[in-house]
Amino acid sequence: MINKSKFRSNRDKSGSSLQLWQQVQKVIKNSNRKSDKTRKTYYDRMSNFVDFVGDRFKLQKIEKISDKHVLAFVEDSYKKGLSVSTIWNTVSAIQFINRELGETMKLSDSNRLKEKYVEYQTKNNPGFDKKTTKRTYIANGKNPVWRESEQVKALDLALAMDRYDVALSIKFGLELGTRIHETHRQDRVAISSAIKKGFLTTRGKGGFVRDIPIYNNKQTEVLEFAKNLTNDDDPKVFATHDRSITQTMKSVQNWIYNHRNKFAEDDRQLTYHGLRATYAANEYNRIYRETGDRKLALKTVSEQLGHHREWITRVYLSK
Image (cartoon, rainbow, N blue to C red):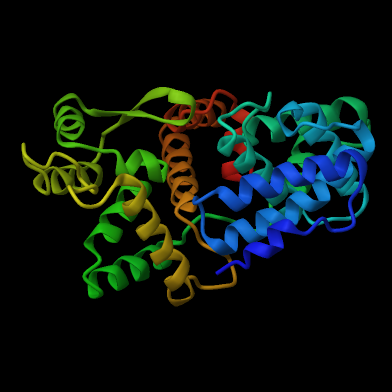
């Protein structure tokens, strides 16, 4: 457990940085979201961020943070030689604080912030091109795609442990490209409709609704299996009367985190979100084989993933 006294340390801050830091401490100390380890990481990351924002912009209220301040911090961090993961983990910490404050900051989501950073670099630095900038300043250098052999090992392990919820959740991500919250919100009505109509309607980030095409037997089998787990009295696929959607998602994420060393074939940190990248890669290759049109393949996959901008899909595909 985190020692709560750590949240009362001023870490030798003063002026605007101290005022921001005291607000951050209060938010993290009073939050019950995320694991203790994650909140400790956010605490450490925010320490550097408030130092920068307080010194550079003299901000005194955490709610006043905007894209301008975050992107300035990102650029300064790269100049100081901080790693990609450290920088964007800090952005994740800022997003966490924003959510805890009820989205009061004028802050774009992380994907949009990354896009803005790439746009800024390619516009203002002639030596940068978009492709290099994305790979150097956004990606972590590790391919998130699950290899087929890793998929098999993970599914076999989950079934051997009687974790059918994990196996089904993984299959959803692989075959339908759903984010974990989209997977675990599925219910009897939505799945029955998908089987009948040939597409699964789901609500993603920002409430954006998209239709995922159902065109092969593997997808249909996943949906049929999920439907058979439900009934009129218990319509949710994963959540039950005594387990919330948040709890079921966390359970699956924890399982992957705790057991991925048993099925990952190198030091890549496989995640549930990597299943979405796997889906994207498979769909891109399928559509390109069928049409011979790379641009069409990219556009189609972008739509299926629910992305508004194709360059984000390129990051998924490492194109």
